[in-house]
Image (tube, one colour):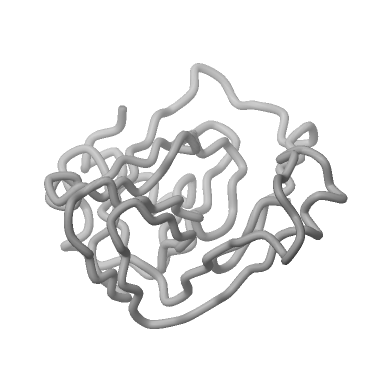
Length: 176
């Protein structure tokens, strides 16, 4: 895991990029990320009863309702959101997304399982936010939402073989 000095160096050399970024966001072993302005709630179209997540045709069964600015996250609910920051990694670094302790203590989880960010990534990070707490939580654009830590790999990876269907995403994208 990189230290704040190594992160700062990576930002200077271009191995890592997080934009926009203030000095205040750089922590001892990571960078604090803030919440973007788009929220997406998904539901099934009328008459549909299920979705097979990896069946492309089933994605047509989903309705995505978007809103912006703020979102009231009710207990037991789920919303897709995104970081304000665009994250870019070279071919020798990967990153891991972590929730913020303050939010966790209110019952908010910012990612379900998708916490690994591969070398070569370029885009905003979609957050799978759930409220497992007992009261509604107001999510507001620009609030601290997660932190990202970085690791330098033992050798560079071959980015020609990188084919993420979410590469370059902007905003709160639904599953493809």
